[in-house]
Image 1: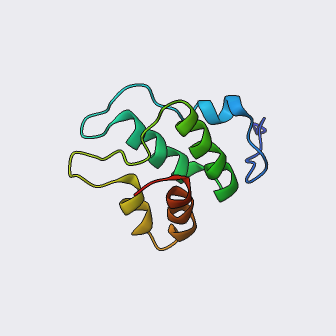
Image 2: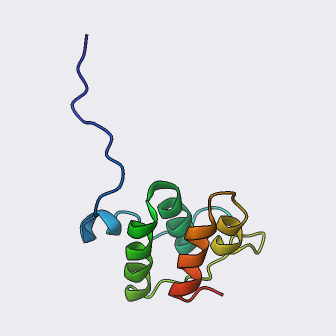
Length: 97
């Protein structure tokens, strides 16, 4: 039987290099790079790491109000999720409209 070489780790502090891996530099069909970055970070991070990511995104000149082609912001999508309230609040605190 093959042994797993890595265990899943949840929580904990993320390094700046790890956070930077979530910064997407190209647009995807129907999404801007910043929109994709925020949604990916939301799906993979705990709230504290997500807050750190939003600071980094802003420092790099990112748009916290980025929209998809349907005109939805990352905030509006996250806020609509049953467990997204804390993440949506962090986006607002960071400056999202």
